[in-house]
Image 1: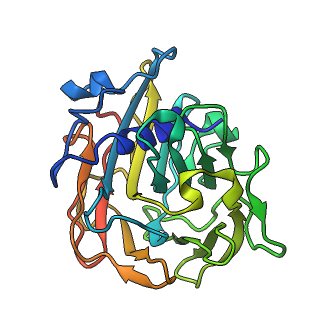
Image 2: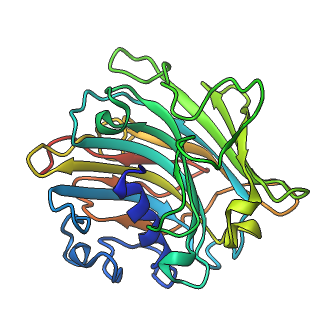
Length: 297
C-alpha cells in the first residue's frame, strides 16, 4: 500500500489552490487539522505516525492552468532506516476534479527508502496512482492492475537504485519524465540514471482516470519523511537543510499540450509543515534544494 504520507500530500495539494506564493504549515488544509499549528500530521487510525512535507506546488494560474507532464532530475541518496521510518523524493502530477477527495486523480513518481514497504533500507524507484484520493483505487508500482510495463524497459517500478550519492563524494541522480500522450491519452513514465536520456518504463492508461484522462491541473516537486513517534524522524533528501550541499531537484520542466518542454524559471509556492526541520529553497534556473536532518523531533 502507498505510504500514507504520499497520499496525504496529494490531498494537501488539492486543498491549497487559493494560497499565496509562500505557504508553510498547511494552515488552511481542513483535512489536516493538526498541521495548522505546525504539528506533524497523524493519519486517522494510526496515531503513532508523524508525517512531514517540504515541496513546491503549482496552483491555478501559477504558472499555468493546465499541465500535460513534467521533467525533473532528482539527486538520489540512501539512508539506513528502520521499520517505521520512510524518506522519499517525489514528483506529483494530479487533477483535483470537483474538489472532493473522491474525485482526486494523481500519479506520483520518484525514489523512496522504506524498510516497512520494501523489506530493506535500499533506495527504490517507485510509481503510484490513484483516481479517488484515499479511496480504493490505485497502488504502488505494479502491485495491482494499472501500470503497463513497456517491453524491454531497463527498469521495473520498485527496483533498487544502485547509483546513489554518498559521503565519499559519489553522486547519483535519476531523471524522470511523465507526459500525457496526445494520441492515446495515456500517461507515460520515462526514467534515466546519472543524466542519461530517459527511456520508456511504461504507461498508465487514460481509462484508469477521470480528470487526468483529460489533463493535469497541478504539479508538485519535493520530499516527505515519516516516522512512528517511538523513533527519531528520518533525514529528508541528503539529510541537510537547503544549501549547495543539500539534495536538489533540477532540470525542472513542464510539458505542454503539444508535448513541448518548458523550463520552470520562476518560483512556485512552498509547502513546509516544519520549516525549521525540513524546507525547500526558491526555484532558480529550474533548480531548488530541499531536505533536512534526522532526529529533528
